[in-house]
Image 1 (cartoon, rainbow, N blue to C red):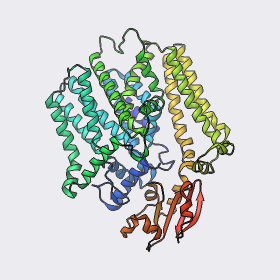
Image 2: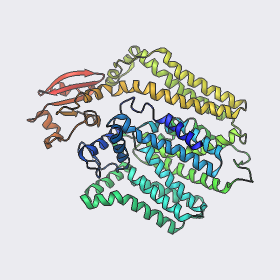
Image 3: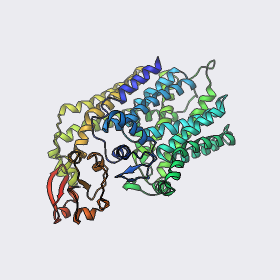
Image 4: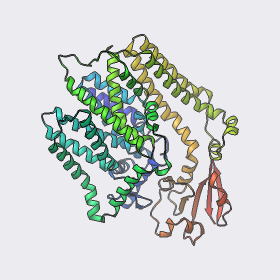
Length: 543
């Protein structure tokens, strides 16, 4: 019965309003467009963008989107639906694992902690690859840990290898890198004592290879080594260079996890407290060594991912999202102990909780202020494109500040309850209010933010659906031109040459878009006619 209730709870959180806002450039639109082009071309073995090979990602998640689009049609809901299903599977997995290695309470706390933290929840309402990849790699690590504590180690090794293979098919060989690093670091931390034998590793490798070769092997046999070679070179470049202009300081992901995984992240600080060590079990029923070992694996996974992607040159928010699993588990263990009165939630813990909660509440409450008082703010903004974005006609009222104020109040109330030793009431108030705040943000605020950032461009692209024209973004990179115009393959190979589209003997109408900050040379271009301008984007037609 609890499994059914958790599944319904997750479905209610993750499925409604998936199509309420356009997909965001780049990642969401990138994957959705790859799925759409598979459907158009019936080429399901190679990932394509703009009907040319796209070697940056393997196809598993895109296949999931293809299946969704075949059911719901090519639309934004269908592109995000697979992650909603993954969200349901994730919460069910957390409850199952928590119950197995603790009790039903630990499983339920883990579910609530994960669903009640900002980024872990938010990503299941997106169309990016990472939630699916994270589940597969987490399960691969989990089944590897189970080898030492199961009477069926062969089965656990096989499941670990299978999940690792699925992770590789979802995002690439970074899954193998993470798995190997976790194994090595665990071995070092455990001073060479490890129950995973060489034949277990061989079985994991065999199943992982078999699973990945279902695609890599077919691709090599069908099309040769070129696609796979380009894929591998891209993965290496991603780890060693700042790809797509996404750089950042070493502690970038530390800050992302602290704020983005609030309130779960705050409970990690309780591990710094000195005092008598406590267990969440009573000695009569507890497989305490299993929990202790699993917690060790989770710490290893957390630090391996955090340090690895702090070193990696490319810094993107979701690169550290695999940390959500170990972070939420470690937080759930502490939440369990706080709820049962086995550890104290100290004053400085409460201070951190209130501080971050208030900062997030202020950020939510400030959004309507920006919209209402944008005319007064514009003179202080030096970015011409941002100023033009703010010209979007988005209705705001001061009353909407109440959402942010309400969240701050609920965080403060939960802190007061915790300070008064009403632990369960305080914890439930904290995580449930965060779930509600996330839902309000997704349904109410994200569409308004999208109206400023990209809607004018999306609507321009949508106006060409069903028309045999060329559509091109100038001086900035976008996948939206392909997905939202529902572009079909062009027979003329010159289409890929921007110079030809601007100056050549084109064979059908050509339309262009650029940002206002890049518009000047195109306004002076003899072959272009300006046909419109909206919210920071300028639209042209080839004369």
